[in-house]
Image 1 (tube, rainbow, N blue to C red):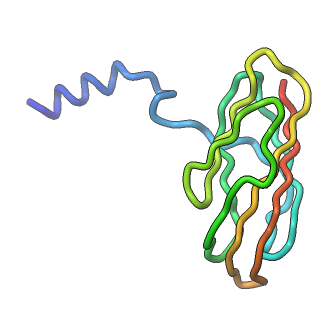
Image 2: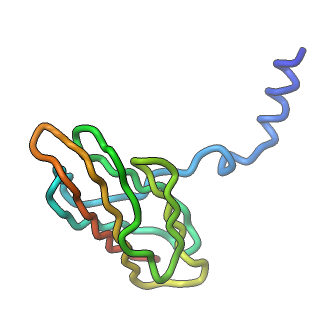
Length: 118
């Protein structure tokens, strides 16, 4: 009976409350110790997750540069959440970093993200 009550409650909850999709990112994956540039396209007011995908083990990460036309929040050591300001259309830039060790290098990598907000 409890399972049915939980299922009924979940069916009334909007999907956006459960999951935010990953940002549509272009650019080449990096290795630890090498900086990179990534490009994302986000709709005005949209929220998406920006995961750092560097092969190896991530020891720490953070925000190097905050966005001017949105908000950036760190969810965990490998994932950030970007939200573009509602009503704004244009460009935004932010930078995040990851420190760790992988099969092809180690150290700190800064990822500058150029966002196009539509």
